[in-house]
Image (cartoon, rainbow, N blue to C red; front, side):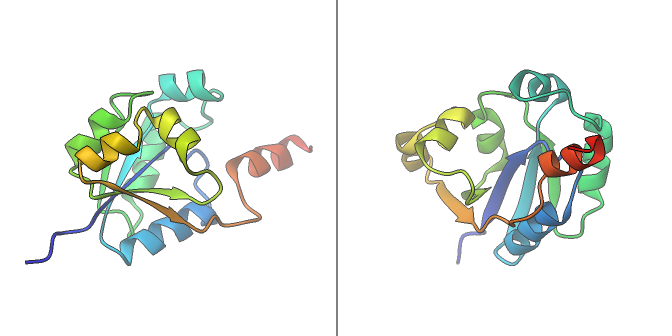
Length: 141
């Protein structure tokens, strides 16, 4: 029996856009898609206060047909708690940020992945669209 592919995608997903949808769609072609959503307090510490609240961001994600499950990143800076609870076989991220720096930011290393039999999967980043670009356009920058 083939092991179910469970893809974990962590993020803020503030101002959901076509780049996010393209990522979710590619993941859905590979398996069961779990999105771990960052809490407002963590997002504020990490980059900036989110434009949309956690509840609004979660509702948007739950309405996406390419996402099977939305969970809360209860560990904030330490994503290991949410990753393990999701029973992920793969952690997915866009190719715009990869390797040791990404793993360090998420609170784990390659050894932890190996011990837990989890693989990193980097999918092509959708160029030309980002939440930062949208915010800057709204601001007139």
